[in-house]
Image 1 (spheres, helix red, strand yellow):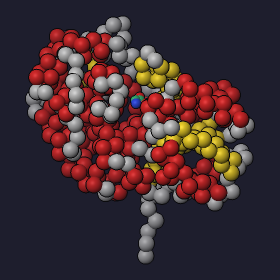
Image 2: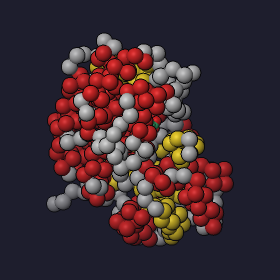
Image 3: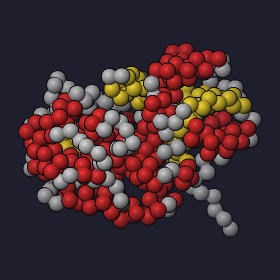
Image 4: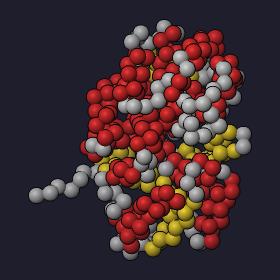
Length: 375
Ligand code: GLY
């Protein structure tokens, strides 16, 4: 007797804006069934990118058709360059041409770029229409599809234009992770390990034991890891939807990461999740130097990332990097800087992070100088 795969459901509790994140195998094939209860009329608009479209749009179309849901689709170029005004304008105008109305549903079918751009388009179209996220990358499943941060990049920096607009449903189909390149999968894993490091030492231990099998394709482990990460994110977002406080914990590793991404021109030299992993290792090093966390924690973090075959050190980033002072300067331009003070997520130990806004610049400089010496 074969048993159907179990779908997990995590509720994001935000009053009238509450929704479920469904996590499991075969969710794309069941998308019509999952989405039908949200529809006022049996018609949706789907926005995807060329890579995801080529691999998975046919399956989504068939799943919607099986429930009698008509679908119209727009396929955008793949890549971060899509997340700007030109493709945003194209998307909004296309949705208007498709006569998408206030009560209709738009589907974002792709990774973080598509989810952010389409969510923002949904936020402004006719002053707000509902949307469903079907995230196809690990990074989007555990982070960007949940919590309602939507937006696009500006010439002045990443994610500087946007809105909080919560989806009505998230379908995280873990089967779709099979088509990711190992590098993209591991980059997304940088965000997974972040959750253990910031708030759940037991989850970090679990990842330390099961991470390699999970990366190797074990579906049960993948589903558990996505579910636990989403549970943690849902809990934080329910407490602090618009990042007045605790939501900033999700930025563990990100102050270092954003400076490194800028220093590498947001290029293929460093993917976002890779920068998060390196940034987490540096944040633990900084915490240890400030006497906040146990001596052995930075080595535990680094050893796990190494076991996973991930980038861990600045030496793992190909090409030249600016000096420590220049990197510190890039951090000072981060959009999370408040009143000119460097804000870091620091740690009192694996699983216990907190927001610190008064971190001495000379200690950060020392961490960066030593990290650059190993290159
Ligand atoms: N990616 C961080 C957040 O959603 O707040």
